[in-house]
Image (tube, rainbow, N blue to C red; front, side):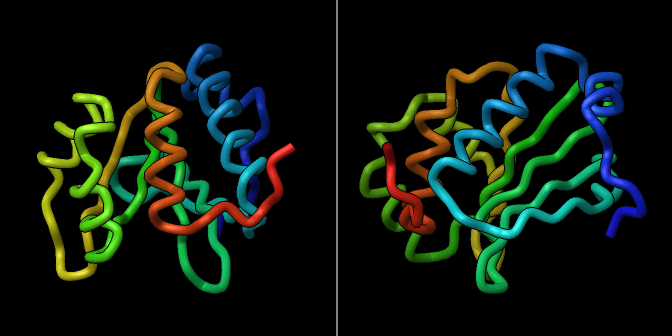
Length: 139
């Protein structure tokens, strides 16, 4: 766990204003669909911060931040991979290529995206819904 959660100023200094806007849009997108616990932590070797969305002891996804870069990770287990692969042609080429280039482990594919804008958000929402159906009513 982190001792202190980074504020908007610290995040902007770390990743830059435009990526901080992308980060906030992605968080809003997840928050409006899912009621989850949100946990800040250290980002390990590769990232400064991890911001994890969890519910019932299971991680839905996680966002990561380091200098001038953000990451969005989703782990797809066997069933979720089957669903993605059955519908893969409806995803952007970029998402397909990142999926294909991600190593498969015993517990699934740990797929890391490094968004620079909102262009893949539609695909992210669909990937999340493969993993878990949204549990908030859409207005």
